[in-house]
Length: 224
Image 1 (tube, helix red, strand yellow):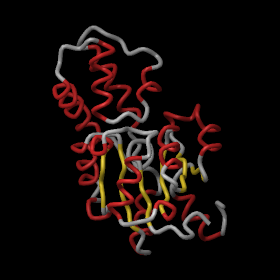
Image 2 (cartoon, one colour):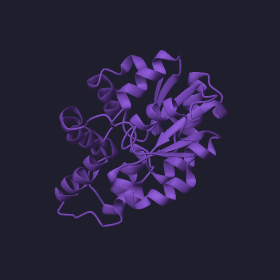
Image 3 (tube, rainbow, N blue to C red):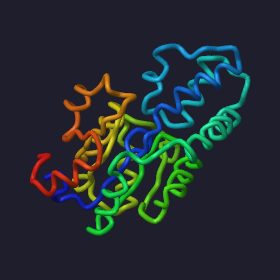
């Protein structure tokens, strides 16, 4: 069973815990449009897994932007905040699964490539601040995914052995990061990465369409 032997669960944020990946494509179009630029087709794939700071460096260097790195990040946070507050929902079944983990004493953490300002705001909007013993960003550890650093750091903060941690991820570099950290990984279906479905299934230990599957399958003994 998926939860057997697990003492902690660690969630990626965008596309894994909340339905928000679509936001960033829109923001890229709007942001680059301010400079008379269009995002290249491969942009989203190229920046997958990068930390917020790494992505800002990439944009500044690739597109020759006049803004400083801090200005770029501040603009992205401002553009994203209203969308996160009003248009982003938790993944189906996520709230119920979080409640199950809380009732059963499972430690919970977030390991995101997003900015700290946005992840803490999302937790606050959805009333989840007290659920997570650790919220960490890739900027905190210096390297984005697929490096395992962020998952190892969150596990250490939660005082959980990596082999006893279950990671939820929606993109290939994130799955690779969780596996490199020595953790079990459950791939989460997301519209943004449907074209990677088979690759995600091959890399991860489990695959779910949404979190309600986990609770249903724990009742029936499925999802091995």
